[in-house]
Length: 516
Image 1: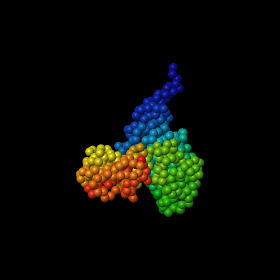
Image 2 (image 1 turned 135 degrees about the vertical axis):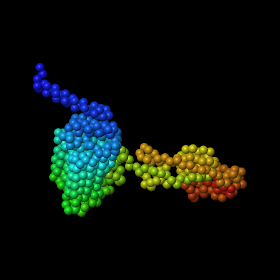
Image 3 (image 1 turned 180 degrees about the horizontal axis):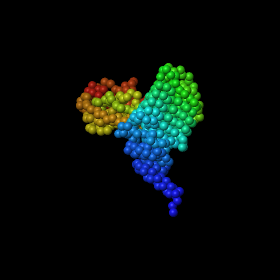
Image 4 (image 1 turned 120 degrees about the vertical axis):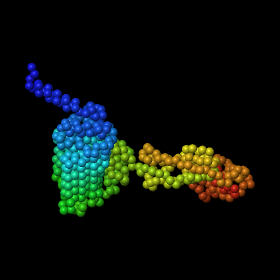
């Protein structure tokens, strides 16, 4: 005989198994920490959203991992993961796996809008959201509309957002509204944020024991009341070691509730900084690292490695920061050129070469030709060209440093290579042709003209027979004329390869000599 309690237990077990069985397979995995569900396509992300929104507390205790960069442009109006129909939204662990989600468009006149509409006790990490266009009524952010820490500690870390967020109240570039024990760390937003009340560059409203630390925002922020570079309000939370690098943070001129970090602090502000030239619409600013405006910082300071690695600048520990290309840190920076970015983004600080122009197109047999060029853009990071002969053809051409020398007519193909000219580990290469012709060489062939001894320790002699010599010049392997060496004594020059250019009444002959 089956008791009522046993029937109820069996029913609940059956219901639990049924819900679990309904989880979409996505791209693989079983949802455990060691084998997370794999999100490989936009369709997989949409399937997760559908599941979470139907389940009420979707993803509770489950793990997810993004396997590829995702382009969401095929979804013209994204339905957030965890919308109003889901009581607690997303509750799992979402590992962005150093991947980027691009072109997310959302136009929902509802509460809780973003890639994730609502998360509760969830973890989101290592994810980039680029070129998003988010519009929502309230509680809207690029990454998360509403972030709650109850039922567990919610954590958003190592994430960034670019694009724009628009709507009415409680809007932030990263998160719209946070509360009850959440934590946001090592994140940034460059998104522009436009709304009405409680508008922040990073978070719209930071409430109830939420910690925001080692984060920054740089997008313009505009609203009506309660507008801040980091948060529209700090209502019981902590904002620590953050930077408001926004050029513009502006509210309605009739209301004073605008400031560089946040206009309202009912929690704790600890060692924060703001761009000294920020436009706050005429609102009085009192710089204070522990106040609403934060301490003044110039753009040069905010783009400096030492600013972030100097422990005394911060509340507890300096930012985990290194120069781009170095491992072992959370953040990287192009020192003196950029604001910080997450190390996992792999951004190169190199200004790439885009073109090489003004390379000589013609040469003369036996006459050294200095290889010169113009590199575009002029501020390209690496500009040293290594020249090489790709195909000498009939010219018997060689390149010695920056000097091209051919001994017969024809066309030579040469290559210009700039190491790391595109980015670290990727060289820039461009191919050119040089037409080699003769000037007066036919008559010279009837005369004996030689230079000796070769190799030499210093003094050279010319065997010229009846040929009249008009001028002698010596060049190094980089094509530089070594005046006043118009004689044939090179004893004072370093050992190496040189070219002796002999101008005669019948034409020009160039001889290669070795000094040893």
